[in-house]
Amino acid sequence: MHTWRFALAALAALCLSACLPVTTAWPVGSSIQYPVNDTTIAGSWTGKIENDPSGATYYFHIVANDTDTGFTLVGMKQIQGDAAASWETYKLNTARLGSHRYFNARLISINGLATTADKAKLNIPLLYKLTGDTLTISVLDETKTAAAIRDKKIKGPVVRAQFGSDVVIDDKDVDAYLAKDEGAQLFTKFMELTRPKGASPAPAHTRSRRTYSKKQEED
Amino acid sequence: MKVFPAALALAATLVLSACFPPTTSSPVGTTAGIKPDAALIGTWKGTSEDGKPSYFHFMLQSDGSIAALLVESGPKAEDWNYVTLTTAKLGASRFMNARMLLGNGKPEGGDMDAQPAGTVPVLYRLDAKGTMTLFMMDEPATKAAIRAGKIKGEIEKGEMGDAVITAAPPALDKFLQSPAGLALFIKPFFTLHKID
Image 1: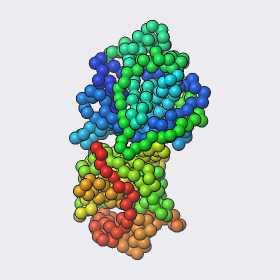
Image 2: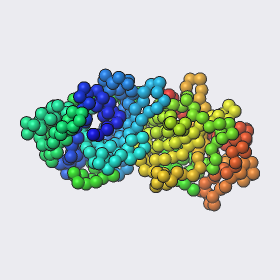
Image 3: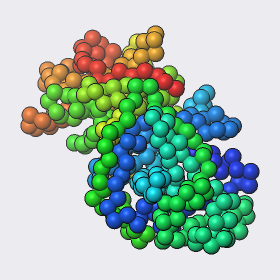
């Protein structure tokens, strides 16, 4: 069973069935020959997860990679009154599919320690909307995704595990599906982030010099 | 000597000579007792002298050290660093002993298991309004103090050579409580305000 920390674990904790985040075998955006990373999301964001019993405050710092291959997300979880805090880093790319914008996130490290190779390969798709200084992030709903797989709208295994199901989208046409409104509707809002006071958004998009595929192992 | 990347020295960028900050071979505060300063724990925000906003997240570790995440913010954010530090109070002065572990995710010195030698002493002041001001040792002043025999240390050859204070803990702590020692911390390199 995967043990996802941080905001995604917080999400898991909120799921009644102790469900796990849905991942994809193919990175979201891998069908785009010349991907463009959305630099308007760069910078710092802060927020809480709705109904999170810990009341933790999250800081997400989206930092451009010097190789122009997307971003590193440095995420920090802080609980007031609790000196201990935790942090994680993710490799983050963005993709615009149809009228929808997505992150593809891959876990890099937890509290400064590199994650395992198998976890580092997993792609976490996230739908995002940027409205002014508000960034809304949604994750794939496990129940809806499992239903879409069973209805053959998208391919992937739905594995029975000890605690609910483990859903993975394994479909190289995942981008085409997520470009549709039907694909975007599989996502459920889990977090709304705002710019801290005084922060300002980035202006332009940058074109990535690199493409990536399922098999390509990037940094 | 070890190279301190980007910004623990958001500072290194501010040093006029473009060298790396002076270090000490022993941590500051050994004679007084090295204890984590609870006042640091949490999230701080500040702006460097080149105008880039940054967040400093200080996290207490189980071994009594403090881990710090230093992350640039804003539209041109490119750097983040992971630092380990200890804190001590010498007289009325508070010090951090800092070591860079990761620069943009890459281990300092190329190997996470090979800890960089020495620590960077940082003098920090907290005022009644909750503002924290950070100072590092001024390199030319530190080299002058070493050359004048005021404190034991080594200076690498060349104009850009690094300075390492090698004085034993008792001598080091005594010096940094003196006016001559405190005078080495000339210019603040960061001013932060606690936000969480």
